[in-house]
Every structure is written in structure tokens, then in C-alpha cells.
Image (cartoon, rainbow, N blue to C red):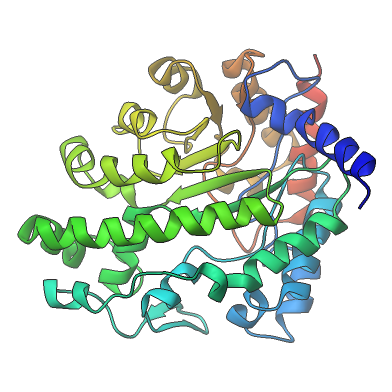
Length: 353
């Protein structure tokens, strides 16, 4: 790419509604993208998925590029997010990861005691994840020149919980037992994860991502005291080390009691779920961009209801600079595609400045 063309694309990306909203600058309309926007609810995705396993899709840059670009173009969203999984970073750390059919991720060698922490590997060379970076490079070339691409990772707590629980959990008994029972081993593990994430996120940015998101999907199981002691220092370390000038989106679910602490941990944009009022949450968060917070289950209703709920959220944002419309969590697999398309059109229509 010539330097002139490169500079043009950089300017177009920086001036896109999504990037402007991340910086809390005026926008022509509220930008919208959706977590898990390349997913099983789309027939195009299911067609690719029928031919290959989930982990293989993640590790084949051409397939990851295809589903990322197809979703962004079909939906007409204001940002693409690379197709990957938050757990990929765990494999170079010595974790035996499998995506079992119908069961989701399964970890065959979970971390349960301090001795298990000592067998985890330092991620010295992030290039073992080059398939992610190559997918970003290919996707960046394939996307429209003014459509930003988001890279991402799990946040330290959510990744640690997966490693300890060995899969999904309702009560996080194993996680909290290690956290409360051996804080030294816990902080050693969280530091190890954090060091790997810094390399991983910055390599995604170097490959062509315009912004990065930290998914702390499980952190809502903690009290504010627990978050402050066991999580905040590590999340803050990761966010502070992200390449300067790159917006960081910091998202969690069930975090109504943790918003101020998440803000303290850092991020240019704080993602909120549907369990909080957007206006109240923004007032608590202060001078930061906010992302959210449509309930994904409301996409199973009808266009009139979807319109009313979208308008309610936009009214609460009140055209303030720095609102990025999103769901309060990922799109569910059974979601009607037409309702997703309707939501995106409605947000663009209702938020025209």
C-alpha cells in the first residue's frame, strides 16, 4: 500500500463514527456494533461452521476473515470485530483446551492449587498466536477502508476463572477457593496472564486492529471488595500497557456494583449490560465513553417493541458524545437475523444528529 493511500485510510478510520465516539467527539449518528455479530444466528456463519470445527475456524485466517467481513457487511454495523475466542491465549500458557460439541470450551488440565500455577508457562513468544494476527491483517485488507476493526481478549479475571473452573460455572467455587485460600498463587497467576495479554493485545494492534476490547464476562460474581483486592491491579496493568492512542473497550456483565472500580481499572469505553439504567451508569462513571446496553433477548420480540427499547436507550444517552450502541452481551444463536438488521437501521435512523 502506498504511503498516500495508507494515510488516507488512517484518516478515514480515525474519523469514523465509532472511533470518534471512543474519543467522545461529536458524531453524525450513534455508532453501533454487536458482540458476537459473527455467530450462529447468521446462515452464512452456519454454512462455514458446518464444514469445520470451531477451533479450526479460529486458527484458519481465511475462515476467520470470511465470517468477520461477511457479518460486518451484511449487518451494516459501524465496526467489525475479529472472529476469535477469548481462550486462545491460554494454549501457549500450557492449557489443554477443547471446544466440545454442544458443551462449549473444556479445559482438561485445570488449575486448582498453587502447584498447578507453577506449571503454567510464561508466554515469551506471542507468535504462536500468529493465526490471529494474520486473520487481522487479512480482514483489515478486506474491510471497507473506513470501517474500524476491533481486536480483543478475555480480561485477567475471566481467563483465570476459566483456567480454574475448567469450563462454565454458576458459583465459581474453585476460583474463589484459590483466590481466598492462597492469594500469593492467585496474584502470581493473574500477573502471568496479564503479561501475556499485554503482548497479545499489542500484537493485534500492530497487525491492524484500530481498537481492542477486554471481555470480563465473569467478573460480576465478585463483590466490590474482592474486585479491588484481587482484580483491579491486574486489569489496570493490562489496560495501561496497551499501545498509546488505541481505544480500549472494557466490558463486563453483572457489574452494576463494580462500575466505579472498572472505571478506575481503566478503559476509554466502559461496556455495560442491560441490568443497569444507561443514564445512571454514565453518571456514576463520569468522563468516559459508554457502550450498551440493549438486552439481547429483546431481539426475539417484534419491530415495534425493538424500536421502543432502542429509543429508550438513545433517549437516556441524550446525544452525549461517547455513546456506542451495543447489546448488553452477545447475540444469542436463535436470534432472528431480520430483527438484528432492524435494530441497526433503527439506531442509525433514530440517532441522526
